[in-house]
Length: 443
Ligand SMILES: Nc1nc2c(c(=O)[nH]1)N[C@H]1C(S)=C(S)[C@@H](COP(=O)(O)O)O[C@H]1N2
Ligand SMILES: [Mo]
Image 1 (cartoon, rainbow, N blue to C red):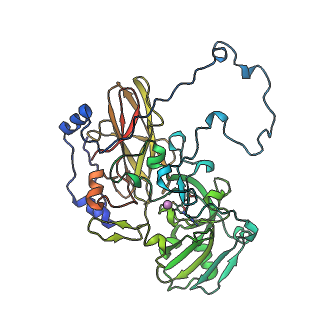
Image 2 (cartoon, rainbow, N blue to C red; image 1 turned 180 degrees about the vertical axis):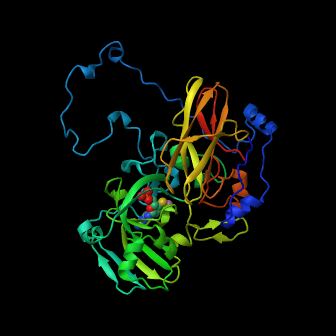
Image 3 (cartoon, rainbow, N blue to C red; image 1 turned 30 degrees about the vertical axis):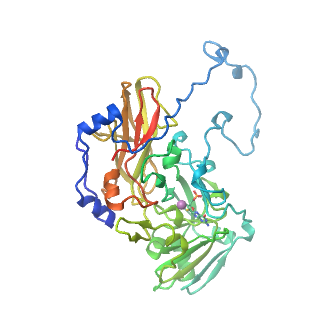
């Protein structure tokens, strides 16, 4: 099967750059050397330990009746607000200590390997705070809309509930997702390589509805969104996005937003940098030019090989990752396995995901095991009959615009290695003969 399914479609500069470059095809010899001796590795994480099968109490196993079948359980509202089973305590947000000096300006990661379907449970959605998690009394929270408008307004949460409501399932991804690996593999879990990522059902009022309410000027072309946290985090959003699908969100997965996600109010710009999705939203200013805030100049720009920096790189391009196997979900003995993972694109729906077991020499098309929605996570899966030999697992997603997820070589040709954000290269898991899975990079 050919390695490149389709050239990247026209669009932004990055895609054109990729399309016009000759593609680096690793030769079979290169691959063979890698498999034999480790050539081609750009650095690897320490081998992960194989997950242990907990030793079972034989008296609870067939043909015996387990102990929990012999007496009554606890009553209703044992947990007035339900919690996962205590046997699932391992499924939790985690931090990487060296990434930030303290937890006030920090990030925690979504435990992708343990999740199923496409909805991220609110309790484990990754968190990103520039100035910590504020506690906001919704009765004292206001949304101010002003600037180039006919009728400036200050809205209470109750006021917002009176506007027509919209729900959409969309991913949320920090553009720094994977940004620690521009120069080589160094994270030892899929939680850390790709876990600045979540997908929720978001409910709220379309920003276009609020803009109509205040009578935004026809000359207005940008909107500043500002948070109520100590960082006063703010970003300039183009009017075209605001009129398209920007949602002013008060609910997440069927209940009020979680404090971590911006309670009581946040912005969601579907498919765009998580950074633009201002939490604890308190102010929208309508104007005719961007504000060039800190988070769109000093941060959240991309240093290119020629020394210039790209700015306002809003879209989260097509990406994918295999979540099982992964360092957290190693293989055991040889035999049949269900390989699964997630794909997403800020430009629309996922069209196809292929998986390679030999580091990109050959590809097999997977099937989708979830509903396929635009700008949402899409789950794919495929059967793999593992013969116990080392394997190099990769996934490659293609979105409905025809954009093909790039290799590291393609991405670095265009972007160099001085970036932090927007790293969406094809990821590789190396499966060792003992079934352990480690993070490696193939160029
Ligand atoms: N007010 C405010 N909004 C914010 C942030 C913040 O620190 N303050 N962090 C941003 C960043 S960088 C990201 S990636 C997303 C993360 O959203 P989450 O914490 O709900 O996952 O929120 C964005 N919105
Ligand atoms: Mo972010």
